[in-house]
Length: 137
Image (tube, rainbow, N blue to C red; front, side, top):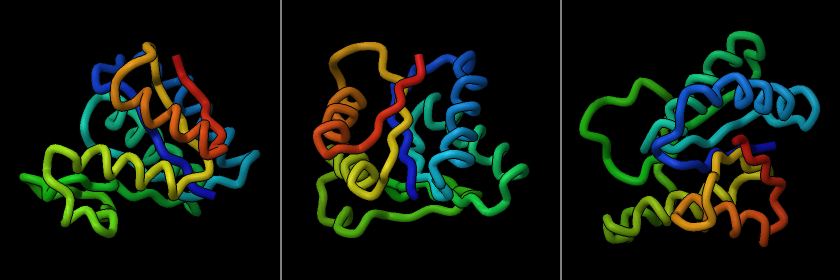
């Protein structure tokens, strides 16, 4: 089972405890063993920290950072480019990447505080596709 994270860039680190508990619950009770993460904002950084921390306790879990662009600096984590992203104009690359992550996941963990913006749009898409969405506030 796969899980993706979607949330606002300006997320506060105070959600990290609840986020880590949510991820651990998915691992223990839902069979999630692979995580897709973005790399554009605080929520993505907090999610990466939580997953790598839990990897020490659950060494069978894996993760990949799903890239929308070729990074400026080396990424010291497993990463992938969604198939077809090379044909997408740069200004649409994050949306393409987010849709790919939603389509390839069973669960979505989100941090959505408002009903507009890209993160909200992709959480709405995930719900329409029947994905289980867990929103951390």
